Length: 438
Image (cartoon, rainbow, N blue to C red; front, side):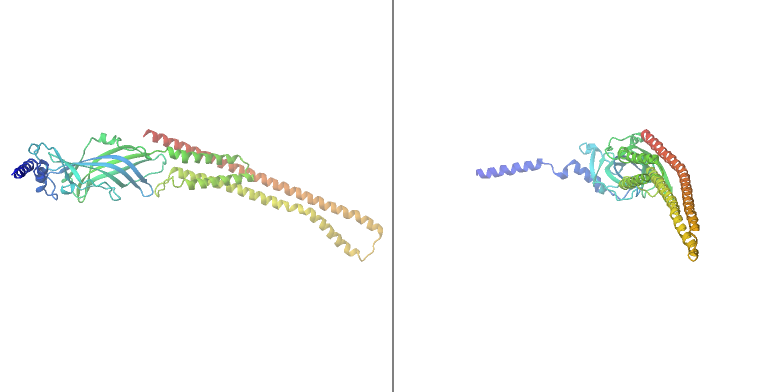
């Protein structure tokens, strides 16, 4: 009997607890969600009056610059994108649902505007955020981070003091301005000067994000567009230390080679070493300097001009040494006439002695003939020495003329080199000053 009473009591308690526990299907949030989505059609633009446009409010906040691909003219950025619009079919009276003012609904079950970025050149990469917030008045807030790979006209002429301006243009791909209009979620000045979320530890600095609204007129209709201009500048300190300062040192060393005599062979060795240094430096720094088919950096142009001047000066020194060697070598053949004079004297003796071999002369004639041969030998040697001295004077005179011409040419190259180096320094300082004012 006692067991039966305890069993009845246990059943009564379980029934009371089951009645007091609310079921998920009876909660206010569940009833509200079911009421909103039960007869909702996401294929239809959510307005009661089809002639009324749906205004989508956009906002953009740049978080980081991930990559700047100059060769392919692409910019990769990480942005925080927000869009807000009003859905007239998703409003409710919060007093009927326990004062619920805002709920989250799956984006896949709702109508969403077809807003795209015109400059997209790659697949959009963003985390999958399947829900959006909807408040009691029907306002939908869709916030998500996006990695944008966009096409941009990148100018690297002023590298490493370059400033890039890339645009991100948002518009509907299908709906005209009569169906979908665009607007700004925040004030334009706030958008332009908002740098709180930007990461400054990268190579690039964010200057501003200006925005404009305009209507794109085409044969398919008029489309509303909002364009965000992302202006960034490069941090040049690393390139100044690793690229500009060593290049200036190499130029100064090459400039010092002009103080060596033009006919000095050590000058050729010195300039060759500087040229090798230039080549090694450019090979090592080739990955640091951006390469683009449409624009060549100023520093690359300057390196090329300096190497051209160096090669020209080196070629001039080589040609000078070659000419001087040829002149001296041709001048050294003339002194052999001294030796040729002796041989000619011997030949003359043999030639004169041949007829006298048949006729026997008196000893007195032979005594007078010996001094005559000795004078002839002296005469031939004197003429050879005279010709040798004249040849040396001519070679020396030509050397002086060549040296005078090449000294002038060397001074001209030196002045051109100074002008190029000064122009390059002034240009870099001007670019740095303009960069600092931005």
